[in-house]
Image 1 (cartoon, rainbow, N blue to C red):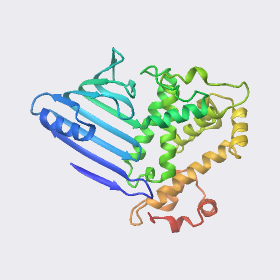
Image 2: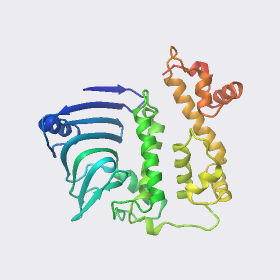
Image 3: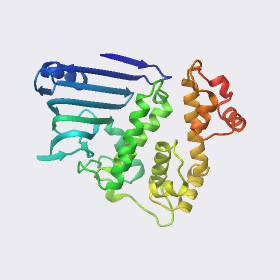
Image 4: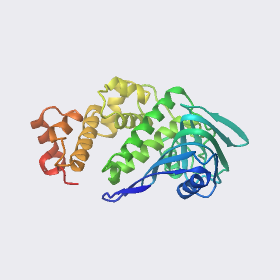
Length: 327
C-alpha cells in the first residue's frame, strides 16, 4: 500500500494503489477511500484492489474485487459515472434497479440516496464537481439558472456512450501518467471542462431539450465538442471530417465557428494542442532516459526538428532543449 504525490504548479496529482484481503480488511480500505457506507462479505482469501488518482476536483478510481460489496451514496458527494469492466453491478436509484453489465456506463445522481451492489467485479468510477456541469449547461444550452438536473442514468445513445468511454480512458491515462500534465492548472481545468461537456451530452438531463441548433452554422456546443474530440485524440491521425462528425456539424460550419470564436482554424487549434502536449512531455522527461527530444516531437506530429524548435520557441519562449527535463 502506498501513495505517490506529483507536485504541480498549483494542482497536486495524488496516486494511491492499495489492496486488502478478507471482508474486514476490504471494508476498512473502501471506507478509508470512499467513506463509511461500504460493506463487504466473502471468504478470507478474497481481495479488493484499488488504483485511485486525484487531481484537484477530478478523481478516477479503478476498483476490482472478488468480494460482494455494497456502497451507499447518501447523498453522492460529487457527480460520479461508473463504467463496468467485469462482473455484475446493481444500481438502485429513484426507486428502481438498474443492472449494469460489462461495457455499460451509468450515472450516479447527485443529492439523492443511491446504492451499488457489486459481486466479483472490476469497474472504473470518474468523479467531477456537479456545479461544473451545471455551469456549463447554463452557459451553453440556455438552461435557466436552478433548472438543471439529470433525469436518467443511462446514455442517450450508443454514439455518445462511445465518446464518454473514450474520454474516460483518456482522463484515466492522463491522471495515471508519471509527472501527469493534470498538475498544470490550465490542463486540469480543460480536463474537467471536457468531462463535464461529454457527460452533459451523454446522460439524460433537463438541458438537452432546450439546446439550440442552427442550420449551416455551428454554435458554441458544437465548437466545444470539436475541441473535446481533438483533445482526446491529439495523438491520433484525425481528419477535419472526423472532428466535424464528432461535433455534429459540417466541415465548413466548423471552420467558420473556429474563425469566428477562436480566431484560428481547427487545424491550427489541433496543432497548438499537440504542441502543448509535446511541451508537457519535454518538461517531464528524464534527461538520463532513452526518450529524446526528437522522439517526443514525432510522438505529437512534429517530424521536422528544425520547424518544431522554431514553433516551440515562438510559443514558449525557450528551446526544446532548455525545456527538456526541466520539470
